[in-house]
Image (tube, rainbow, N blue to C red; front, top):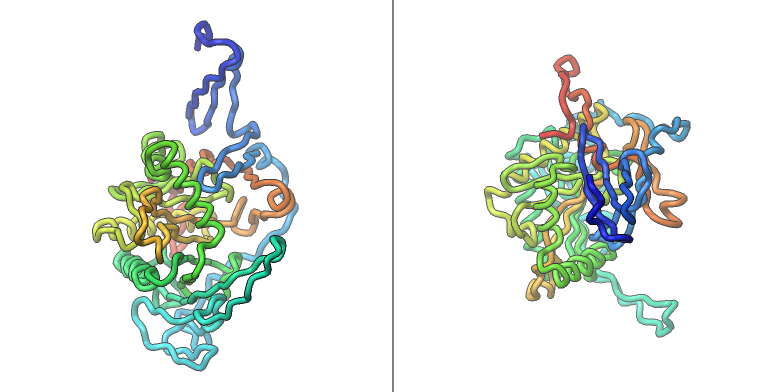
Length: 388
């Protein structure tokens, strides 16, 4: 590199990925500086949340003497009559589940939102504000068996889950401005029931995270002339630095701004606002890439990998009549594990009081080699985790 033509006090950046190590070369005041991303702390910007993440990769070298979690149960019975999510079981409200053989949807027996909640009234003081919160909460079982998870389901079974998700957006969207589909998998993520399921909360208001994503994506389109995540997906597909998986219609990346150690972002290749807008081919491709991604997660520490995931699409309700072209459909996966199946990341201390921080860099995560996990352990072979 030559610095002959670099004006004084000007910064020039160049990133180089060499043997899975990301180097950032910076020319500052005619001096060449080299940042080894896996060794030097730095900040990364999250354009979806208008916030910064502290990356401190060197901290992975420190010895661990903190909390160790119990390994997840691997002897879950296929059917437990005492499990309220199983076919034929009686739930807390006395209703008996049908003998379902695919997806099954019902009203949450203990909902956080109800459609007929009273209005709390308004206090005119700016420090004591409140407003009405109404909605519905549903539970959706993916499969009749309790000992199965999405990565162990067949693609055609996952496709039925996707179709039901899209139906729920169409059903609840005209009434509610936000329909949040989310899955908490594993006891570590607060899942109280070992049965494959998700929840759907539809609310009369736009929650904090979607409201933030709404503002950031709108401002990005106004400033740059292209939807943020559509441009981001194209650039990540070209760079390949943080790419986990891809197929004809979808790609999965470890976001440049990821906070959780093994966080991923699932993105369509074309401009899509909401789940119901997906074509049949795109839904089949989505089922395929979801199965591949979640299987790779299970490969990581040879365990049924815990996570919280959820879909974000353009707001609904009255927004259905508005121009929402700044939005791009996407799914977030937030796994808590850090070093092993029993060591998790905690969002405490600095993260709660100052800003989000991570140890592993996204580039390190996307190139990990681990043994492949199979249901039958004696069939295990060596494989690459986050490479398609």
